[in-house]
Length: 240
Image (cartoon, rainbow, N blue to C red; front, top):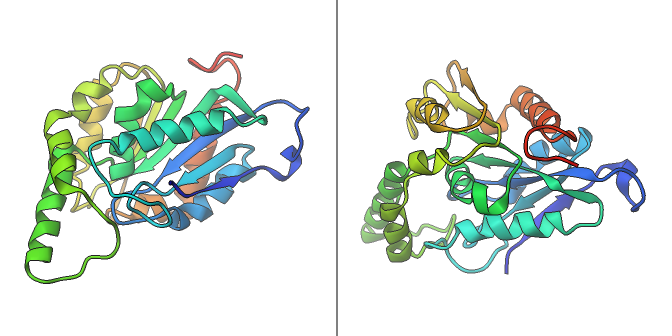
């Protein structure tokens, strides 16, 4: 069972008006949906229906992060697409770190119309995180931020490649990264931008750390407006 929060614009409480663009928001490893509520409310104020998800093994969701976690993103997109107030062809995505990785991997199957990726983590960084987690557990530390199924997740990460997957994405993508990110080098976003088939924009922020882009009010405004513009009728693949 997955936990999620749905934010709807106040003016869209009943069917009958123009369908809303939808947005799925996914957190990073060890985080949860509540940390993205401020962004969700900002995007909702822009006129989008926003579904903020707890990945398996995180927050209020059951299970553990494993090799099938990308299915959470696809399922969340399908759920939002089925909402009577949401336009089924105007579904966007915003993901942070591991959430960004999952967005790339799910983009085609989820038929995402636009993506915003904040410091997206490649496989090598996620594998290093698994190694670090195992070391902490061996040292007797209790890690309670999330639950992982390391063997299944490791096998999946060793088989996947977000840079190769990016070559199949023709939806517009906005990449936001801090230059001083010590967890995921900003060159990851630059390389992804080069691989993408569709339009790609990159915002590099001076200073900050791995979490700066996802907590900045200025970035909340800028990225939500970017997504809303790309999800307007007639933009890219989201034809009416």
